[in-house]
Length: 196
Image 1 (cartoon, rainbow, N blue to C red):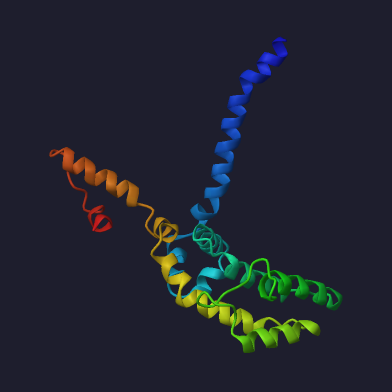
Image 2 (spheres, rainbow, N blue to C red; image 1 turned 45 degrees about the horizontal axis):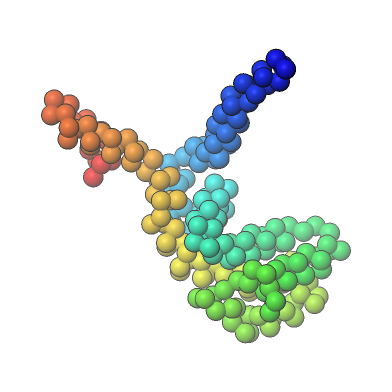
């Protein structure tokens, strides 16, 4: 009985430890990214998608908008292109097609809230019959352009990006509050540009 009680008493600590550990794991990728790299994500969508933390942040943003199908399709195409064994091309291509392109797709990709243009859909449907590493290129390109024109612009204005590009915002706000409530507190010149 004593052993059982000891176990129960230790449980909250272990939960606390595991939850703080999982929080650290979630935060770790963002913390490891240099400020310079995060700023480069705003240069072009390619910079964002070809950085693991950038892709993760963009994915999280799209999930919050309930529109992650396009990025999931793009990532699936990137992974598909790395297929080494020709025998694996057909089953992988069919999986991607069934999930994102077919008329009964479970997560159909969309261009401006419409399915892929019919010519792109036809080319892709034909390519899947005899798949090569490039069979999704046209559809992937269309989806990339859509994300670049729409989702990417919204992402750059979202807290998913802004929190990473200016992590000192919280500190800055606290300092502003202190200055407003404590007239004797000197204003640090290094904080002023960050607060502007």
